[in-house]
Image 1: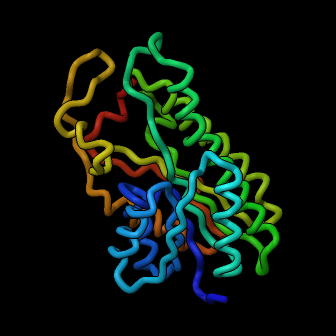
Image 2: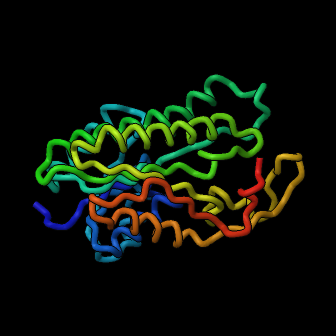
Length: 249
């Protein structure tokens, strides 16, 4: 069994998940890369150079798939020390009255139910392992605080992640399980590429918004992950300094 700390990153095939996985690998974590696309997970693993990684194709919306992920991790490494609960999706930015139930349910399935399933599976491992405990870091987003126009499913699920984070922080205390949340604003990934050319504002206008290098997000997550379990970053907001967050609404 490995003596190095084991970190699990969901949505590790691209964007913030990939960057977080690489940042954790640099901090000498063994990184388990979870996501639906096995090919992009392998690409992340290749970018990690000689770091120890394990790519496991996983659909976070499926309880059996999540259970298999953590069984494979236990078999390979014997424990789980850190989980970055990152997998997420969004609905098309259509007017609220035009949202379909299918669009709503698809976002809830990944962003909320998926986060719950991964957190619960990790929690069970962390509770039972020796030494007991571990850390769960949830990806909240600026939308856990304030919405963009036409973003009800995403915003609602990210507000719910804050409730999940607080509940896990309380319930995990007796098992030495820490839970924190990182809320990220305008990191330069393909998901937010349109923001730098023009994002819809509350008054309906288009505004090109500042972005920040995604590397700063990975560094922040690695900092949270590297703390001893008696210390926790409960909530962290990392964002482009000049983005319209303060004053947005």
